[in-house]
Length: 134
Image (cartoon, rainbow, N blue to C red; front, side, top):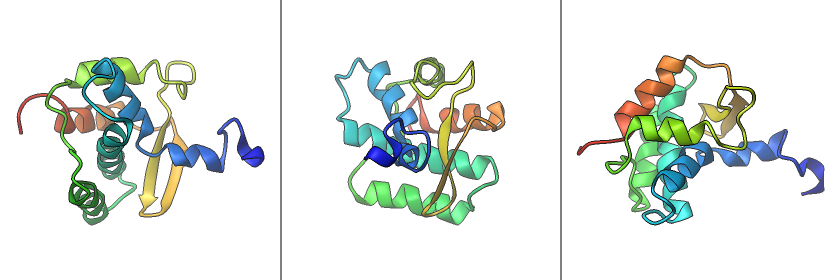
């Protein structure tokens, strides 16, 4: 733990799925989702976002989603819309300036943190995973 106490380097990669998950928890006033459930949905969103950015193959993004679902976790959030998710993501502790920093995937097992991604990819990801029935 002492090597990266402030989560600036390798420990920050453990936050894969957490920015999405924390936004989901906050948007539902911490009443609808257990932390692990929210992070599970966030893992699927991070994989989808990684694919939308061109970092992760469609097959690997689907594999992550399927593994989360096989664990009995939800990967689509009907009760929270994309705008609410984005609003809560913008107040996450990993935001620098006005940019939301995300942990994304270059492959299964190859995570990295970035704030350099197309906003359209984030909006596409949130639209695909949040709001409305599926």
